[in-house]
Length: 169
Image (tube, rainbow, N blue to C red; front, side, top):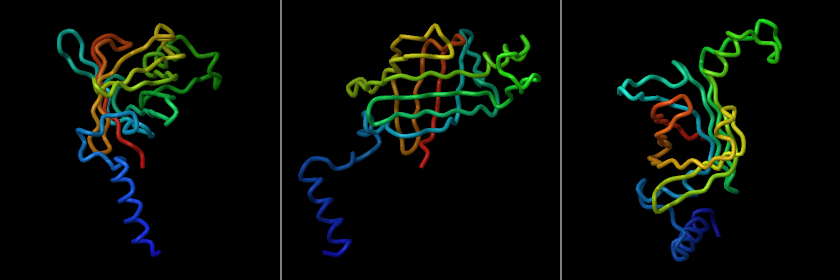
C-alpha cells in the first residue's frame, strides 16, 4: 500500500471511530487542545480605574507547558531583570531582590479542564508567589489557531490579568 492510500485509510478509520479533528476553533476548547508548549505574547493587568499596563513590563518573556498527563509549568520574567552585582542569587541587594520579585512569577502543578465551561483550573503545588501554594484557580480560555487566551480576575499583583500565548511548533 502506498503512502497516500495508507493515510487515506487511517483518516477514514479515524472518522468512522469519531476521532476526527474538530471542525473549527470553537470545537477546539478541550483538554487535548491545550496540550503543548507556549511562549508569551502579552500579559496585561487592568487596575480598578481601568488603566491597562504590561504586567511584567515591556519585552516580557514567558513559557507555559501543558502536558498530556495533566501537568503544567508556567514562568514569567520581565525583559529588564537586573543582574546580581554579587553574582550570587542568595546575596542580592534589597533593590535587586525587589526588582526580581516584582518582575517574575512562576508556578507548577496539575491542571484540569472543564470542557462545558471552556475553562481550565491550575491546581498549584508551588509558586514563587507563596500565597498561591495549594490553591486551585479557574481560568476561562479560548484557542484560535496557535493562540491561547485566558484571564484572571485576581492577579497576583492586584487587578485583572489578561494573557495571550502562542503555541511553539
